Structure formats: C-alpha cells, structure tokens
Length: 252
Image (cartoon, rainbow, N blue to C red; front, side, top):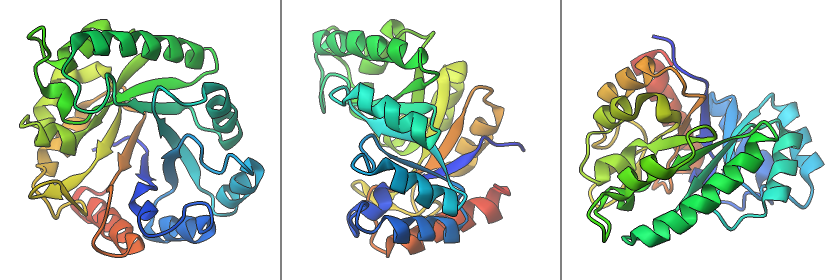
C-alpha cells in the first residue's frame, strides 16, 4: 500500500531538550531514527533561520509543515516556510481550548479562512488540527467539528486529523477519516493509554491497523506525521521505536 510522505513532530523532544540550543542533537536523533522530515512550531529558529536551514540540509531533512495558532505572526511564518521549503501549515484551537460556543467558533473560522487565503497566495496549504473538544456539542446543538466543516473555506482549508484526539473524543478515527475523505490533507499519528498518557506508536489504544488502512485509501493527504506530546522514555528512543513500528508493521 502506498502512503503519503512521513515526518515527525519535534514536540516529542521539547520537554527534554531546548529545541533551539539542542537543535543539532535533535535533528541527528530524528535522522538516526529513520525520519526524513520534521514538523515544528511556527517560530522555529526565527532568530537565525539560515543556521537552521543549513542544519536541515546537512542532514538531508525536509520540513513537512509548521504548527501554530491564530495569533501567530503570519508574515514571519510565511518567510520562514519559504526559506525552509515548507508548504503546509497546521492551525489549532478554534474558539479557544475546550470551547463550546458557536459564536466563538464562527469568529475564529473567519480569521482562519482569511489566513488561509493569504497563505494560498504564497503556495501554502492550511490544515485545521483537531483536538477532542471539537467533537462536543456547541451551545447551538451541533458539534464543533460539524460547524467547522460547514464554515471553513474548503478551497484553502482542509483538516489535519489527529487520530488520537479523535479516539479520545470517543469516535473511531478510521471511520472519521473515511467520512471526511477528501477534506483530509494532513494526518497526525499519535497513540496513548489511560488518561492521555502519550506513548510510542503501537503501544497504546488507538486502532492503528484500521487507521493505516484508511490513510492508504485517502487521495489528498500531503503528509503523515508521528506526534507524541511527551514521553516517559528518552525522546530519541521514542522516535526510533515509533519509526520501527511503522516500518515493520506497515512497510512504511
């Protein structure tokens, strides 16, 4: 089965190392684990971007995408993305964390659509990254995710589906991926146990077999990115375990 290009979110290192001070070591660990691309925050190495670009090139690493919020400095983001060669921007937290107000969703959707149109003019695709709260009812009765799907500008915005957060919201992530289909442009592979204890891929409760089958059927996914917010193991070890799991289990 053919899968989209694969990357790793650097957040797995962020609780254990300063991503700026230890950037070289982090990128070495990413490459050693077998990844060829990274996802990072929108301000990654903004103080010296040419230095970071050189680090990436020396290790033959690509930037899959950036991840930020509605409050980012979009001009700076676009400059960095152009320099690093990235064309995908994930944005999260519409309405604010745990929002249930439809009015707040609509306010932020207007801003999201505006930002996405500006990004499109620079060749950048915007993906909305879900958490669990968007699957809760709003004060108007509809689910937050339903409101998002109805009012996002689909010509410039699609979804970054985080499969673990879909599962935490008590939905089947594979079924959700198939339901939204061509609206999925980016996927975060994540696993967890218990009460949001993040673990390496294959060590948790997310039904990754069905998720991977669904991903293989999707036509418009630009990147699949392994993400683990925190780790009980050294981050480099977590990266290696998750990469090996994908390789040995799915030939990915």
